[in-house]
Picture 1 (cartoon, helix red, strand yellow):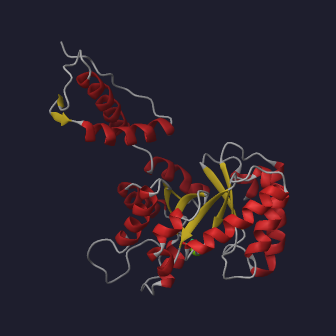
Picture 2 (tube, protein in one colour):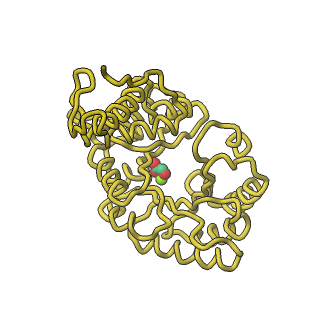
Picture 3 (cartoon, protein in one colour):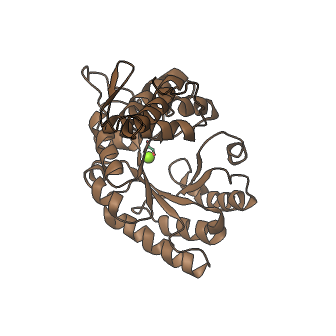
Length: 298
Ligand code: GLV
Ligand code: MG
């Protein structure tokens, strides 16, 4: 898996020492991760390591071993089951000491905070602001479902009996609001039925529609769908670039210095420009190229 990850078209790889690693295997997992990071090959992606959460006996050893061993080849520590801002501060302090003692840039290693239980969710605003290192707020649906006693074992799918709305709507929106308020990325968590790519698409489509930035892939088979779902489609991307060009023209002196104008049958104004900026940035980041050009009206 560590080798395969080098070859995949993903934005980030994270290597796990938490729930995908049995307690007896954790010491060896730390060593494998340090060796893989130092061997390299992941440089085109964000490189993160998920350590164990602060309620276990492992967190400090995970962080120390990974940062001392491979801190120069690491972009972020993912902290699972974050419940309070203090837990972020504790990691921030430990990282600062490790960076100083290992000759690394202070503040260089980011923190990705996983929200996986009720206490974490109600504290998510404080968690997002607890350190400038926090880059990402991640939803951990499996642990979260366990934490709130949701009556289902199928992660991300609607629990049987909940026949109205989306059972995850509040949780996703709560995380998204904290992320947007404090300028963090909002990331959706795993979909465990790895052979069911349609299921992955369905669940990913919901958080993508709300505005989430991405989702975990547990298996290479989920990567293509994730890249597609969290990127704008060609039509929306073209439309966004058209709005930007048209609004730039209409607000200029030669376009009449208008605040609101018509693009075809659609009225566009400053708010349209803001929406278009988001869509265009995502499309450019995904490598889309435009297929339509704005033509100045006669
Ligand atoms: C991920 O860690 C999850 O619990 O869903
Ligand atoms: Mg979890």
